[in-house]
Length: 344
Image 1 (cartoon, one colour):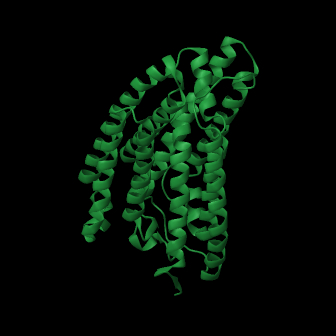
Image 2 (tube, rainbow, N blue to C red; image 1 turned 180 degrees about the vertical axis):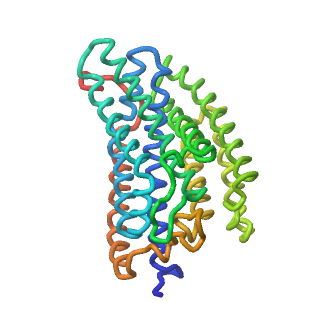
Image 3 (cartoon, rainbow, N blue to C red; image 1 turned 135 degrees about the vertical axis):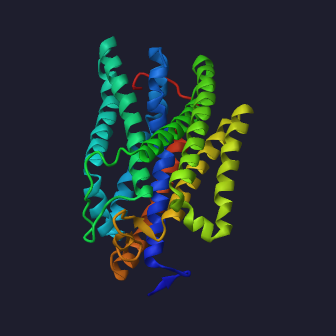
């Protein structure tokens, strides 16, 4: 098997997909978190400022999700087929609320009536919360394992996904994005809205820490197999330690009102959490609860080596371009939000 820098091409593609989905979680995470917090703002001006804070970037951030789905199809078609078939209902619901969220943002400012804007505000907030929750539910089920047979067919029921562990992962994901979004919004606002957001930042951080502690205890007590890779490689304990330090630094920077550093630490926490997921799963990508022999791994579910080599070349060109564009947009629209005639 050919390798590049000591790793085979399937493992490299696994890392690329992980990096792309991590980019999506960091970028669209604060968008979703801002949406989940939207109804906490009572005044029309505050809600408009909150929407315009993400206005220039939210649709560009979702590009990372499209890239991630395409990368999964190109590199691991068997995983793509199994996951999208098994999670058909959650993914269709996810797609529905994703569209509803976009419509809510665009339609809200089209009419001045109070009931019209209030309706889309509720739609925007609920859809943002639901997207974050569903992402966590899918992630929780992948960590726990799903009942797939030898052919990769899902054999569970429609309600299988709503197990206690996946629901807790979903709530924790929502709490993480709410904290991430609150920190982003406080960097983009001023005056009374800024003061309100400093309170929301503190409260959402407490909410996330509580959810994270509950999830950690639940995992240790009831899902011990997830830590097998870390136990087998003691040096990997550095990752949980770094995650604890990163979360602690969020609270430290919030106390000092250094919100940019708090936001960077929040993004770093998202990265570490997904890195832990990758470490706990590898070399598996989809774990079968029926028989370990049915697991879809990085190697038995990948495309041909030649295909992986070709798509890695495209990824080496395309991903930096998207990253450059994303950086340019954030740089262009840096600073506090000012409402104008053509604002949302």
